[in-house]
Image (cartoon, rainbow, N blue to C red):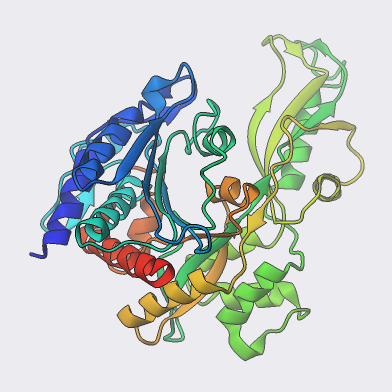
Length: 446
């Protein structure tokens, strides 16, 4: 067994066993457990480590580790990024205990965080330690940012706060979670995902209007709940009306090749691309515009009162460049006429963001991928969700990408594990991740 293989699996198991579940008001992270464990591991090789916590949140520290560059004034810096919190679990739903970090006979490491993202935080830490103990030194700074509070964010003790509190932490390039999935298309091609950005958010609240009355005489007043039902029927599942966008066009160009060019019939192109892989049937429609997923509803405070107002909140996910006016137009167009309602906005707009689909980081990732799978191509894609790369871009790191190789773990296992029971990753992918990060650092910082 390769020593790096054993090392990364053991480190991943160690930190998975540390319960850092995070959901605001239910669990509060305790990410310091993992940050301290990683610091001890890295400091053993002489890596500079610092635990950085917001005042009053000593139990929720971020790990900032750095290998100083030899030519820091001119050479670009690189950050390996991941988060140490995980979403909560209900152990009753799991085949294996979620915090025991068992490795089964087929080579799968089970546990909350195996995929998202303790497994690859471990790989990034092992890569940095291996680089340092081999005597290699980077020209620009090499960072490991293992941060708290990514899964919930409500405590504001993670990446956004860290970058605000520490203006000295400003990597020029970064690689974070996202991407790395292997897609075997029905036409025989192999694509490997590269996350170049993610959608933003701008939640909406639609309040249907009626007239209050006693519930014992349903026809006397104008109960707002049936009106809300009509609103919900018109919104449906909240899939977007497709809109032209250069990043979506870039995805379609890779998927469809010469048969697609920007400006072609977008709905038809999306349908053709979606047929290439079962997962694309879910990803592509959600990426093609502003999603309006209904997630929370409310109405009367009393069982016997028909309410004058009934509301639904929509989790609206938006493409980079989408404005508040664009989202309002999308919501109003979907609801249409004939229903009295108010429209309000529970939270401020968080814009989508993206990095260039080309450049030195992308070239280095492509070089590594094709060394593993000679005929593979990268599929530059947007994440439908949110990662800390958005905060890095906002702080000036325009070359912020998501890539962690999942070349052995089947896509259906990978996708079913995110925020779900039975999260697991094949241990070969953890070793592959170490090898990838060694390649990336040596390519970009030597």
